[in-house]
Image 1 (cartoon, one colour):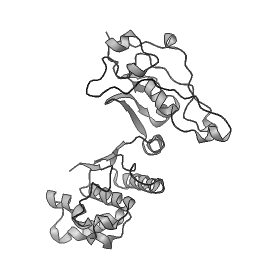
Image 2: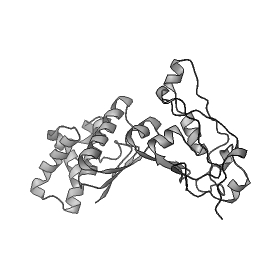
Image 3: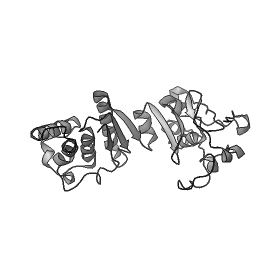
Image 4: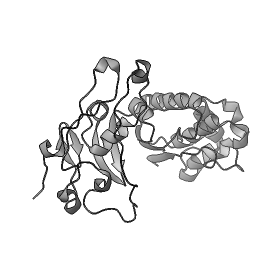
Length: 261
């Protein structure tokens, strides 16, 4: 009851044979949190909370747009007054024009109901807008974790640096400049049979023998947690330019070396 999920695909996550009232009301019916004679009123209240017409509770999912269907999914997640909502790519299947509306809705709900969100996404701009604290993962392992400004302004892990360098830089393009991009070589290893030691070592330009022999632990480095034997920050471009970061490669030989004995 205290943990609910918002699914990625608003089309396949709603049963097309059920009305919106049934979809949103089922969790309350299963957990017996609302009397049956008050169920419709509660469903209508939830629909209004997410910006839908409460009188449409008797309609089917096929009668709604993608953004409206995702709002129905959000209403269903709110039905049991959860403490935590896991939002699995909640806007990736929506049009860009609708994404901002849904993200703003989630932020409003977070403030209004005091709900914690585990927000899973690949869109760097949306993650930066929504999440005050960020964990970067590679092949199922957290490689860096810290607050928003730390991760985006001074990333320490090579994968985080490469990830952020791949983001389009509109402001640099406007002045005729280009951000140096870190190009990773090789293919992503299989998560079923990952490399020994550091999982990123097969594509990392700082990789050395220790990376294959020892898996780097998630340690406190520079005010955040990093899982890398050779963690070092990137040089930050002037804040007024609004860039994420610019790559400055000091060379692996001069990097701090973390070991656990």
